[in-house]
Length: 217
Length: 107
Image (cartoon, rainbow over all chains, first blue to last red; front, side, top):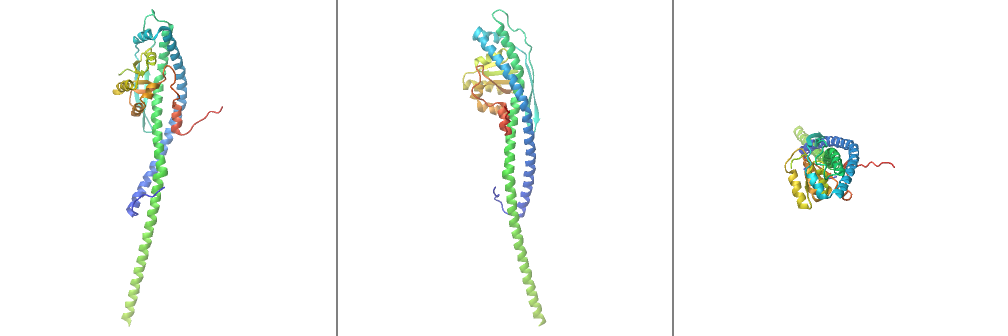
């Protein structure tokens, strides 16, 4: 905690009081924002656990099928088959605002599984690969939405946390310390002025008394 | 690139996703990955851009900068076909790090 380097004047005292009030209000608002972000992230945590376990299951299945299919049919043949596969997937994106953070909303509509190649030269592993990867793709939209939302919210939370800490441990104590110092200095000055006035008054009274006694004599 | 799903990664992973009708770009080094990423994100469009963990490792700065822009196509990282590339920070870890607490399951 340290004092700000400003002159101890009445106007600076007023300005600092205003700054302190604003910093305190900002601190309260940021605390609320921090709490909202923490609650939102904790709410997403359960969703993450569910989706990630489902993703892991589908990914393992799809990747294992692909490895087997490539081993059976060869990479070049698989690539030839894949080059002819087309699906009309549709992705719609929007934005949602949580505690001032714009996070994505992703809606996906996937193409339906249908035969994309001839039966000659392909086996059931190829069909299984297509089926498994389509299932995997269905969940990737949700994962993308969650991943991006969490990264943005986590970053905003860290930012809010840093600001809350700066206000709580640096700005507000500094303002208070400086206000205390200015208050003491101004009080000292007031006392000095008071004593000077007293002295002047005393001297004036003394002079008046002396001049009165001269007149009576 | 303006398809609904697009993937940038090694040839095996890209091949797999092509079976689900995903367009893909095979990259083998940093330069190719950077160029493919630049092209895929050059024009905003409704879509999802998948990159493999290897590509994410190659373009860490670009990937983080792009994520923070929060514009479509939205990015997601997928595991390489040959398994995880070392220990990676999960979304749970990210939440715990940001929130500053860790809930441990009782065994």
